Amino acid sequence: MKFAKDIKDIKFEKINSYGEWIEVSEPIVMASAAGWYVGAICKTDGFVEPFDRFTDYFATPEEANVVLTTPMEQGGFA
Image (cartoon, rainbow, N blue to C red; front, side, top):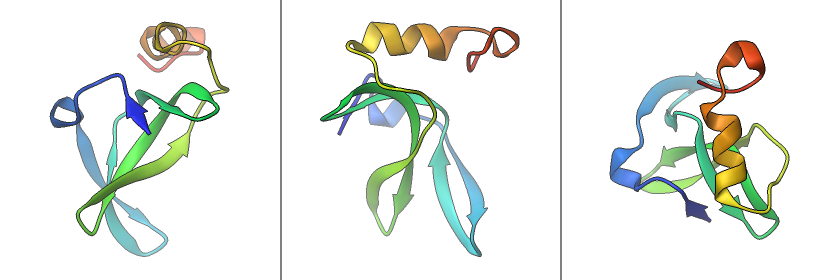
């Protein structure tokens, strides 16, 4: 798992997920073996792991970043 943003710069928020309080990140550009996408990570028991994928996969982090920085009213996350 790769991130286009340094982990120390990612903002996290505590949410209740199925009765358990966890820290979930803001939407970020990240990658898996399938490609780059906009998603979220969570902190659980001292580990960081994928939490959700919000988009399809892209070939480059720049393509995923376009979606991340597009205003919400235009279908993005900004």
